[in-house]
Length: 152
Image (cartoon, rainbow, N blue to C red; front, top):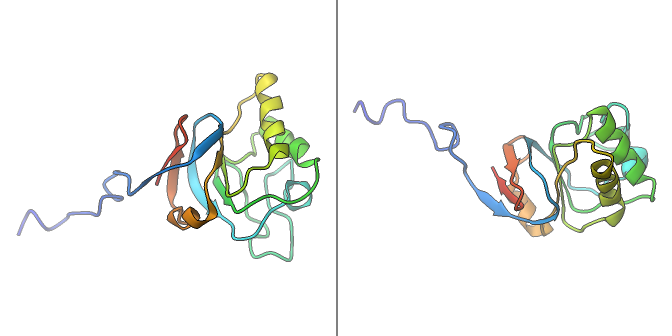
């Protein structure tokens, strides 16, 4: 009886529940709570570059901060100014810990690469098919390895 009492599930004991392999488009490491959004997001217009808060009042995620989160999206929408917003987020310390997209957006990657060239801290950019996003549960702790493995 004593052996069964107090047993916690693997995730409560600090062991990973799942390791999901994504394609690392821009390598790096990051860790934080998952923020999974079902809709596309525009970094230009939907994200405050100085706070990292989501600003679109028509969306349920309005007011949520992406800072330090593993941000999971089906895709991005918007303009080429998204790279400048990402650069501001990285410079100010309000960027997500990692960005996981169902479909890669070269513009947002440009902001990350410019930050890297400037010697600023950067984040990993990963591609993971949308049909595998459900394994990244909103609010779960996740970490990203340099090889693109997401541990949840």
